[in-house]
Length: 266
Image (cartoon, rainbow, N blue to C red; front, side, top):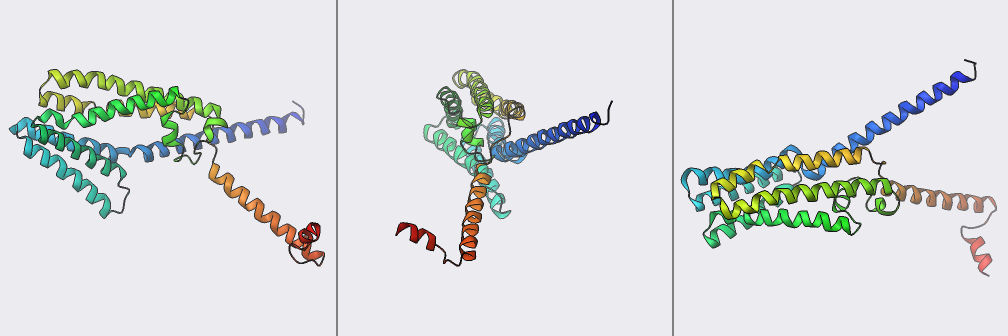
């Protein structure tokens, strides 16, 4: 090896290490973004607990009123805890609305199984939304995660590799949720309330985790997001520097700011 070869090899090694570091950073950012977007462990607990409490109480005493009240009460408590801790409440609030709709359906019809119907219809609608938006070229998971990654919709036209990852992830979400619906809706007609409730509780987390994991896999292999906010800040800074340079040049010539422009206009 000549003396000229070694620096080249060292440079290549440094580039490889830098590339690995960027990939590790991208994976860490992806994990943090998914954790934030989907609520993490606490969000999952807030999603499962009201339904679990409802089916537990109903299995024991078959009392629709007490089961519904308990589920709604625990949802409100979860929101109150988040408010007291000054934490984000979007996941807890979504749980309250879901439980409230279920309680209204169940109490209005007198059928305890209808407590689960709004959530099942929401799951079906969400599955169709993932599939339809993907077919339309605007995958829903990209619309959800774009602002989290500070890339907004730049992935649609400027980052094709990332758009491809969002397409794959949206297909995964849509098909997984459709498979979940294929299990739940027959049970809604054939099973009793307790059986449906326990199956629904069992299917709350595993499909969700599978979809999140697949999303992480697809995005970890995708190009890094384009930070459009950083680009806008850089453009604003460059414009300010340009104006400052122009003002400094005018001052050196002994001109008032804007005098050159006014003279050209004259």
